[in-house]
Amino acid sequence: MQRNKDEAPSAISQASARFHDGHVVASSSPGLLDADIKAEQAIAQALGKLSLKERERAYEDVHGISQPIDETPKTIADLMQKLMFELASIKSKPAFDIAKQLSEDFVTNHAFQLSFLRAECYDATKAAARMVKYFETKKELFGAEMLTKTITFEDLDSDTQKVVARGSISLLPSRDTLGRYVYVSSPGHHLSGLTTLATLPKAVWYIVSTVAEDEESQLKGFVAITYAVGSQLQDKGGERNKAMWFACMNAGTCIPVRVSGFHHCHSSTKQFSLMLKVVTIVGDSSLCVRMRVHEGSHSECQYKLMTFGIPAKDFPVTLEGQLKSGKHKGWLDRRKQKEQFLKTNRLQDGAVDVPTKFDVLLGKGMPCQEHIGNKQLHELVALKYEEYDSAKRDRKTEIAEELVQQINQSSGRFLKRDDASGMWVEVPSREARDKVCHGFRRKREWDLKKVKSPKKSTNSTVNNMFRTDNNDENRQKRLKMSIDNSEGRSEAV
Image (cartoon, rainbow, N blue to C red; front, side):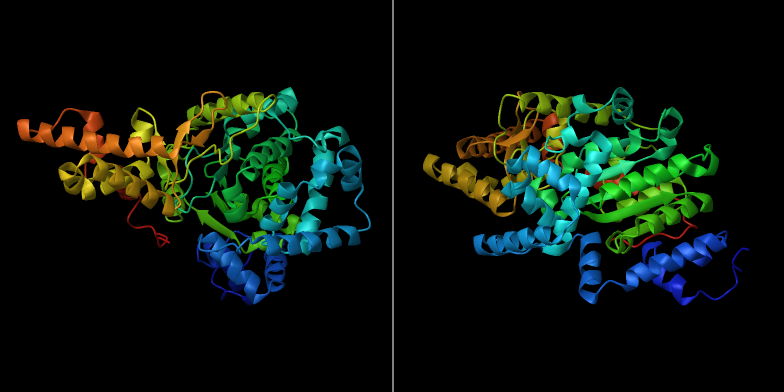
């Protein structure tokens, strides 16, 4: 029996409305069946178990305004002691016990345990439960012998390697506007090629685990997107779709990095019904309250994601629904390079796979020129140019050092790609200062070209460095214009 679409929204619908684009599920998806209504009720009950503080924390996570605690040595020491107590109080934890027998150093590693505390916002009880679930799930997926080993691409079976390489499960090559990794799973582009459902949770585990290696992600969490727009449900009962959603949500509750924002995009009520059932099975209230659901076409859903800070230019699905896997293949090549490097070497402290928007990248080509942090440096150079140009040598050095400090104080670093590991690593202060001085020289060259030739410069590299228009804004405007003006739009965060 279907719900009457003219019926006034129930209290349950109102409770679950918070994660459906701000609209009541019953009115925006009138095709929901009794089973879906029960799923809504289960979600609402899960949300009702959260305290006001937990709800506020979830809201802050979704919108990227939460702040981690000040991790002083004393605070961390106290939390570690509480974590040990909570772990000891869990009587049945067979996989955890096996892991401890295999390598106590792995299980008791300070950084490893701290990542679970961060994932649970420093709640020792929840962190202990997550750690136990981590080892249970890892044992189920990869076997007891892999419990104390970082899973590499070589450790995956051939079918799982194919799923990972396909690119339908991927990380965006740039972070969102709040500095978080963005994970995207597009079921319509990988379900037809699956030989067994067992590959999905393994592939998701492998990719999400790489996010957990990033310290900033441990503090801020990451954004997960299941993108089912235009997806055809060809498997009976939608079992493969449900397996994909379950794998994503399950990984988010055991791997030591939290899902700070979860977006589900779909274009049919049937897909939404399947997702509701998975949410009910997982039953994690912290995920429910962090969920936002978007319904519409490719352009509509991608615009809605953009209002939450998701970089539209790097999204792996085009507005025509085609999968773009080129950047993912580049990521996977660098990932395998890093894994090979770590067999015999140790990474430099602070090395990252994906720079933040505050970082300045050293290197040639448009990817570096177009990076937001580089553009911000060019703006600072333009503001200080007259003083720098008229200053003596010692003062020029001081100005360059001041700009380096200004970038550092804004959480930015000067990074360059390490050829051996494929990672971005921080350069010495002298090299950072040279980068700033080089910016002043390029600014002078650009000004001289304008004086000699009043016409528009044909030098694209220099022009791109100091132009005043914003490419990202233009792209967003073009995407916005492609959306039907008659449809409702989400408010920007």
